[in-house]
Image 1 (cartoon, rainbow, N blue to C red):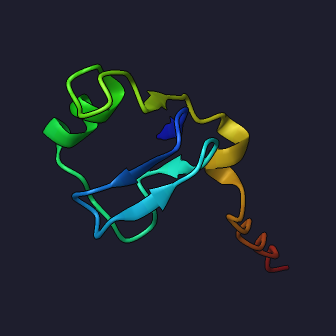
Image 2 (cartoon, rainbow, N blue to C red; image 1 turned 180 degrees about the vertical axis):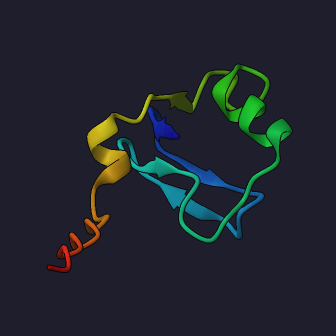
Image 3 (cartoon, rainbow, N blue to C red; image 1 turned 45 degrees about the vertical axis):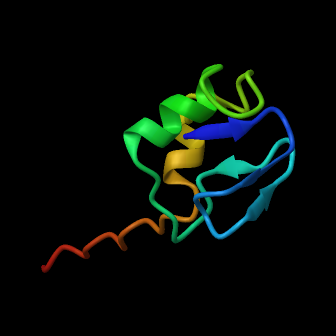
Length: 75
């Protein structure tokens, strides 16, 4: 997962505007590895990183996942 650190408009994503703090990429868009490298480094039109990799916490990974109901034992 990546977090936007500089406001930018992604020219390869239909000019979608990403604000600081947004998650990158947005739902429904799958950028290439090359594009992620460009945006996370200085090899882009701005010449500075626009996104930063962040680790997902275990809590955010399981967020929204419902627990399976426990089975009752038969007597």
